[in-house]
Length: 292
Length: 340
Image (cartoon, rainbow over all chains, first blue to last red; front, side, top):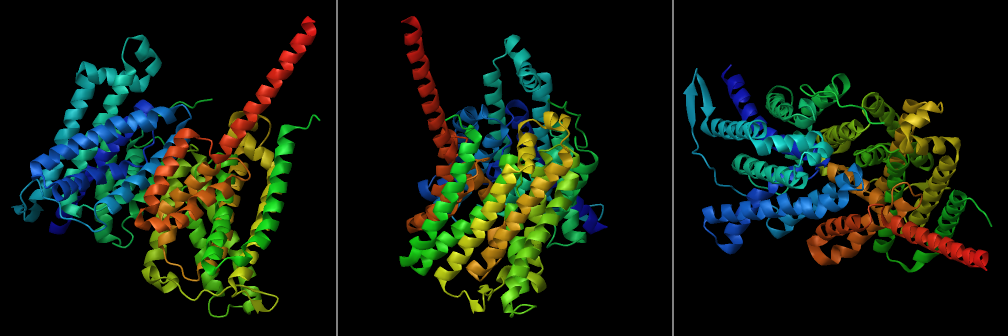
């Protein structure tokens, strides 16, 4: 029973991180029809950037973090939209998706060749340790990850639903033509979603890297988990992606313990196929209209 | 001189294929074994890309599992041909080739069937899942595949009693198989099947209204495309003589998809160009040390930004421009004549 509670908590913690990546993924999909196959690498890179700034520029950690955040937002929030999505968008969904695949290889290889092929320690933002609760040993780090991620997601949700800018963003996602007629600068709104996506990726990166170490190949696992979370929850819903993230995190951790650690990566995929078969619009998603 | 543009293009494809085959038969006589390995790899990957080109470029389905099919073919061939083979060395490779194609064909059917029941672009994610699971099986089932230690001593096939241990002889063998598979593909694309595949991509609703069984044809396109992956695997295993799970990982499937798009999806010769770009270029760039994949990815990105239709897209665009210019000149000339 102890082990079960610990697994649930660990599952919620990784699930919260997957949810961050999945939410960014769906936001970008909604506003610009970009299927970002580099989403996992987006989560991998910020931590590497911090470590690289410390190693090569001998910057103190806080400065390195600031530099990494600024650089990442500029390159993969603004730059990604301006120089990859914008020119490719008019050619349809597929060429753009392919371009993001190339980008994912590019990011992975840059991290490997430019920084290190080995897994690196990443400083934890919260103290290590554990507390006893109801007889179970709960890791402080897992609790902290969960809390930080949930606060960020709730904040985002409030921003999207309660503020004028958030509403404008939603309008852009739902019907760009009408949004433009109503005087919303859709371009700016789309850029904003890309910046939010980059921000969520940074947060996810700083949360997960202390646990799994910072390594160039981390993106593969996180990226796949984020896709699955997005689809399982429903491609067109932020709360769907949130639920999907938690489900995938839980399934992932429980499968590793009770099914087979060698095949832990396969279990969420089975879940994905089941969802696609029986509820293709996702557990919380609404049916999209069929385009003719 | 009013030839139908489609026919002239297809004939040009066939001519290019056959002339290219003849040149390739004689060209590499002076090459060392590394050079022969690289061009053999190019042809093998062209086959896999050709299959994906059918799935993606003609039928419009996104598959992220072509490297997994390649892997199934490679491991099947390794298992059947290793240790002298089950039914004697002369026949074990042909058997392996057929079995590899058959397994991947049926895997394609089983995989495509549920995915196509729902929306088409879900196939991408189902195939991504399948590729991940296959990679895990290749890596974890050590008793069958050798796991991370790999599967070594895969023999080269024998033709008429003599084993193709010579690299040049094996390259020519690969070339012959490639030409045969290309001819089969060429024939298929011109057949009513091929027309139906194109119809699926261009306008599924209209295709359905014309009586094409959407699901059956989509499934068929996907299964045949997958089988080409299996065939390529049957050649890949004896080419490298040692296989481990790494070349069949997800990123390898990504690269195969990039190959098709970079070459020009939906163009018959696209896969050959794409494979040259994706598999020969990195070997050339190997001189740059570990940076070749990085340079490759950057090149793909730049190329896609310039021409999303792929390398053949540039040629097509130039041809189209020339045609339009010629037509414009004719119009101008006739205008002058009318006014006179």
